[in-house]
Image (cartoon, rainbow, N blue to C red; front, side):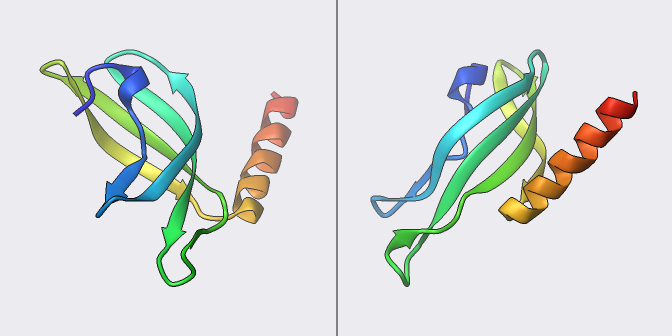
Length: 95
């Protein structure tokens, strides 16, 4: 469990292989409730290579000094990410 926001990660290692490789993260909000956007890629065991970039928005709550994941939304492709960016940009420009 992570005690600080900087320690929060999506990286995961299984049998000595980093099966989820974190490429970057952007902290969207800080505090007892923290939201982070991660850029990552998964290890494809069959191809023995990392797959395409993916993105995940994760929400954490700090309880008893530890951050615990409460929810997540995975953006599974560049196309889906671009659609999200386009919609948000349009809404922000209208507002």
